[in-house]
Length: 255
Image (cartoon, rainbow, N blue to C red; front, side):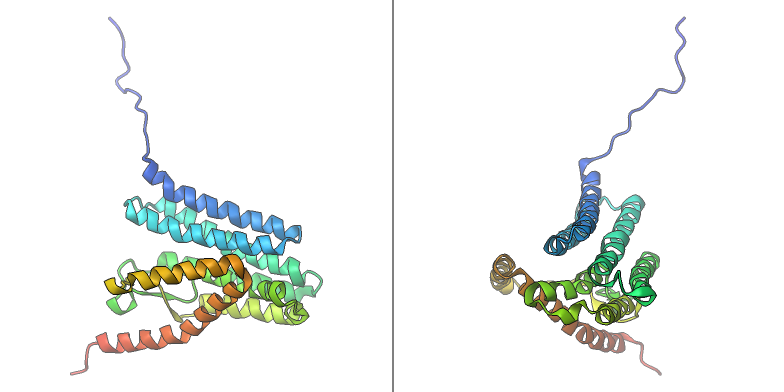
């Protein structure tokens, strides 16, 4: 009589659609770490490009997971850890290497403040209620980590475009780090665009605008970067006012 194990070994498999969002997250993580290497080599244009590429990967991984319905606790944890490194630690260290490493403890404290702020902002995001009220569904609380990483590198972009020495001053860079870090941990409502829908007749103009922005990125990347960053900063008070209006409109009236 042949003895067989009562438990047959089974080979588990995962779908490529489950792997794809995590592969995008890893690609963004690698881009961010490579940006830090570029900073150590003084290749500042490469730093900006790689952080921007990492932001694109970050935008795609969550949408890909939702599109294929492959969201998982593993993917969410990996995404948060990647965001902390790529948009928190790496930009802070890049600015420290660029302008602050000879500026003493206050400059280092500003660097730490920004990185810790991004960590706290991500922890708050991960602990938020999954089903917010309708008026809050289309808003983030505070500046999101990718947007903060995008904004905090503006002094380097200004230097690349205009060569202004003032933007390398330790006091300016330290204040900028603290300002963006404070925006990340603030309760300021910022547009999320989760439920943004466009009328059908605006599709072609929007696509034309995307093509125009793409051409601008190729021909004048730093000017385009500054324009996009300025538009985002202008949108912050607008989003706060719109959030307050929608909250007031949906609040139950006192009887």
